Image (cartoon, rainbow, N blue to C red; front, side, top):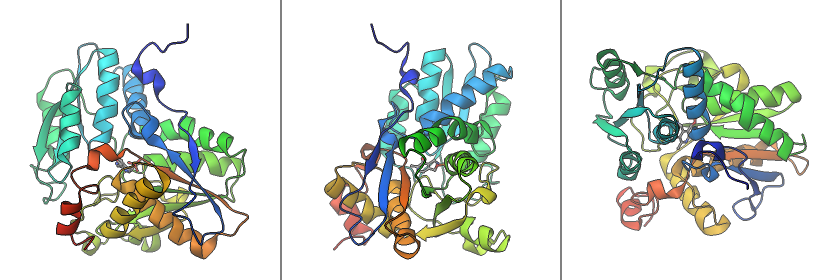
Length: 327
Ligand code: PMP
């Protein structure tokens, strides 16, 4: 019999699929690492399980414990799957800009969801970071993974996603692109790939309203770069420990609108029903490819999550019109 012992064993080994239509005019081969094939439908399953396993080993999480995390939804889903398999409870804090689908999905897998205001600074007591920290202090036998600064996040991609991409491309990859939120995905994959071949170029996709690109270019944490934006999952108003700037050669900023429109094109033209930051990643990757890559290049771009979480936004024409993204 061939079966898995629980759903978390289905995490990883996602397919690498060539983009054939949105790449018109690009000479490089562009391959998408489609992470919605993970059981929680996102790349974050990988690091969620790793954070839990490492916490158990370190004695930070004990039987009957509660996992408390600030999450844009996808990490919560991964943590919830791991918690079900291992018998833990979950409480998640989310910013109110996150889609309702994400909140409903987390509740569906048994988590308690606390919704916090988006437009407050990270150190404000009501921010989703602060509320998660406070609940962790108040609730006995609770564990706060803190995906931003927990290095198990990067390690999951160094040990899993990076080697997968290297093997799937027979070591011929020349360029890797991914959106940057906590930074774990890009930093872990990049470290593995650059150890195999230091010539591989790594492109971080950032949003307008986020500090990463300016910080990489100037070393300055410029607060004037920070303003609210709509894209979910990438860009930050903090510098998480998991963003290893030495592992990211350059950043490309993508607007909410360009990311949203490319997301819809991926669904229609490639049959990939993906989330918003996937459109941002592909849009930014293709901008880079246009300028810097040739027909000899093999570029891999990572698509973090599934489109179901954005049915009320990107895939809703009325919402798209209200935003001014389509006529
Ligand atoms: N896209 C989405 C939809 C996400 O949820 C995340 C995680 N914040 C990312 C991209 C970025 O991944 P990472 O946190 O590993 O940088």
